[in-house]
Length: 312
Image (cartoon, rainbow, N blue to C red):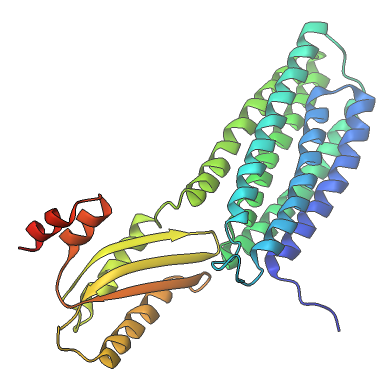
């Protein structure tokens, strides 16, 4: 009986396999033809392979159940993977720029234009199909690593198209500098595309709050419950797989604990329905009165005497 593989792990295996195929095709043609643009695309595909394999192990770790040591699970490893992926993409962009400048300086020629053009057409078709598959998985799972992979391969589509245009222009004009100039542009574009991936990963590592619209929806769910007087100290974060929510809700002072838990369960069920693709860890706190000012004072290190002044 075979082990069931999650859609996101299967997606990383598919993307790494496709990237390996493209590396072989582009590397052979790039080295043989001397085209900087094709060689740059081959290097990018090689990095794609390494990153996709790394993503596979990152997702595998992230899906492990919480234990005594990692009590909240290892979901943030996906954010670490995204930052590493973005950094690797940035490094590949700088290398492509370096190779392009070298070609402009030494004025080397590009050969085997027809095989190079056919290789890039093949690459565009295969990459397009892969992007559609990754976008489908990303939409289904809302997985940060898969979204980063899909974004990366989308930039590859543009860079591959640019390489194809460059080879076509070199074939028509005989100006080899066009190949280097396009390679330079691709390098800059790759660096730019990596910024969003790194930014998203760092945001998760720094416990950035959920999107404003999501936070507003959570607040509305809490406040519209007929038995909740008010709420405060709503805090949110995500590790890419699990959303964490904490809040204080004010209930009647004489309410039974059993009733309070029933209300909390109803609120939690409504919040979880906002995004069924994610796991949720929701921690409500029951207050008999609104103690937001006291909590804020404690958060900012106020003294005991200051707290008494606030309460009074």
